[in-house]
Length: 449
Image (cartoon, rainbow, N blue to C red; front, top):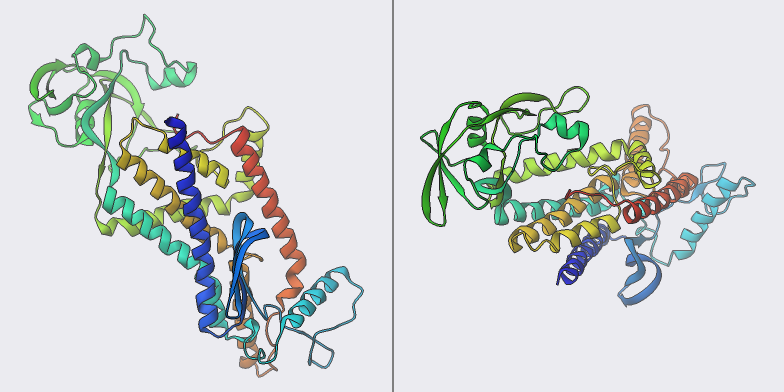
């Protein structure tokens, strides 16, 4: 049963990512057709075509390698200009890079048909080209917002409840755990106050020191302030109320701020302090959040993803080090679709977690992937969408300055000249994908402990 659930989790995320890619390309396709650009192909995947059907002037299909997709529009490369400034498809050149550009322009010219003069991509106004290229990432953003909204509002965010999930047998300080890696109790370790008080997993704390308990974080603050004090505590067990006394012990524990977030020092390590500790954990429950919390949560997610992208070379170096050494993988670092699928399978196979919590996690995972696709595609390098947007913006700047200083119109930006860089970026992306897939196989990210 566990294996079946694992496979179902992987399939759920795989289908979700495939649909996300397909809809990303629809985000390019629809505005392109709206602006009368002739679209020859709409394909999901790369490599050999598994299925295709031509409708009108566009061939729609699915290819063998499901790692992306594309929409093929005519006129992506403008013709080169000769020495007089007139457009010319063929130019003689002995330079290898120039020849690449010439070959690309020639291939574009051969795709033109009668009546295509005003249906080529490069002749569109800059704002229309930007709408077409931003359409794909925008769809991913919308999908991400909708899915995270479904998770937060429909299912809820995981919050600690006042029901006990586990009770420690002994007290081991955080410093001792860090220094020795100790996880089991030793005869010399003092008994945990929660165990001494007779608290059991499944008990619900209803009162502490005579005060009603409705919030786990509030209870935690009371416990931290009550070190060394014998304090009455009331529990509900199997429908019956049980009263006992608990004495929190002074122990070194991490500091949390008013938002219940871990406080870190300048080196990124948790700040520690000695506070009251009883040795019991909380059961998580899903608490629906207001719609107004969705966009801030999306913003935090995008900020985290952008941080990974901005530091991508270092992050990839860390992944390579982990893959070829004993160093652990960073759970917040990049991973491939293989890693995402593995996490999805693990979530789905956790039968001890309620079904709705697993479903919410899988939906949220697909939503996060879409937000990652949104950010990654905005990188201003060809062949990514952001590269085409950057080219259109540069064209607008050039033409704006030419108009301001009454100079001749410089014409469209010839992105064919950037093909060598495009090939380099594409090769690096394939190398990055191969590294991440290898790392996700030999040293997968461990987020469940």
